[in-house]
Image (cartoon, rainbow, N blue to C red; front, side, top):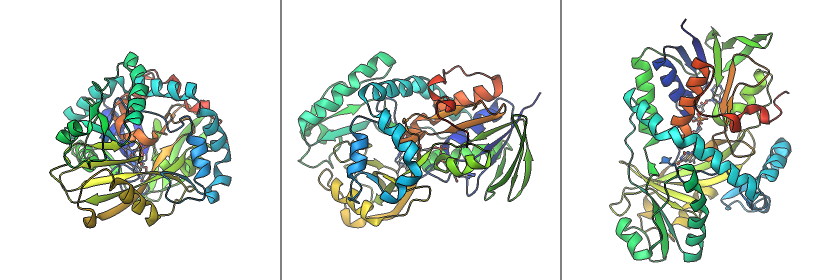
Length: 415
Ligand SMILES: Cc1cc2nc3c(=O)[nH]c(=O)nc-3n(C[C@H](O)[C@H](O)[C@H](O)COP(=O)(O)OP(=O)(O)OC[C@H]3O[C@@H](n4cnc5c(N)ncnc54)[C@H](O)[C@@H]3O)c2cc1C
């Protein structure tokens, strides 16, 4: 029997899952409160990582967030006005910032993503544009910091992750990325971490969904929800009422307000990031992450996208130009680029869970509702594997990927 599935939130996770569900024979409707591919779907940095995946909740991160209260330029920034709305989240985050939990989180993400390349290829056969660009380069000013970051990756080899072959010196790195400044002394290349233009990826999925006759509804916020006996029976949106067998909520950083309509307390907070364009440059053809500056640079066909920062400012974060200026200022020490040509500043939010792991699965209070959120800093990288796991869960009732670590019920979800 054909299963009807409504997906609320047509960003990276929702759109990719819709495509795989359609391929498995489901009758799919994607509904978004704004335009499809909104949220962080098109505006992210385009890193498609398999090796560098990690939770934000790392040793030292909580202290760093607290000390940022009075400094608008810190890469990880917490606003005092956001604290009352994220006390529970903050306590869970603080508890997650231990070595043990951080390492366990990295293992969970690596295991989830083991089927990522296969799932990305599958999306490609269904019409998504999935060609990956250059290998990820990670340069440092300080050789000791470079060696430390590389050493932290080593244990991940046990979980199928491909490691960098070793440290390179500044000149070797400049042969790969000529735009790196002379301040760069050490670093490495991560061979299986690449980049993709997220605008092209998202648009190609939307196009494939349209071509397959999937119902796509934009500008249709959910107004009310009909549920009884542990089942959601209908949702009424600004553009009409929908009924379905299954409903998946994948509203990214907007999950908390959406969850309330379903009687759920979904502990996801927006982690705002920024990016800005610079003219393309022959000296920068690979994606680059600057761990010391907590910022990235990704070359696309029409621009270099510089980005970074993680800002907690409540459910409706405000744009702060000082944070863009801070990204530009910090990267001048790492890259020789046309700094006066910046354009197209953007901000958008990552869906941040307190332990840094996605929430994917059926909360115990509902038989036919699936939560799919919390992909944080690596939602693009985790989209193919997550969409595969979610589509299997919806069609087969179980997933070939063990979703135990991502069970939404690890948080208290009742309002
Ligand atoms: C600056 C920045 C850089 C990033 N760089 C990378 C990177 O290089 N690599 C990587 O792997 N990840 C990156 N990410 C993270 C990645 O973009 C996110 O994790 C990912 O977009 C999350 O996917 P999602 O589908 O959950 O949410 P989104 O892709 O944000 O989509 C959410 C969708 O839900 C809709 N929505 C919201 N609220 C509602 C509602 N109430 N009702 C209906 N619809 C709703 C939105 O309009 C949107 O279309 C970055 C994020 C940011 C902000």
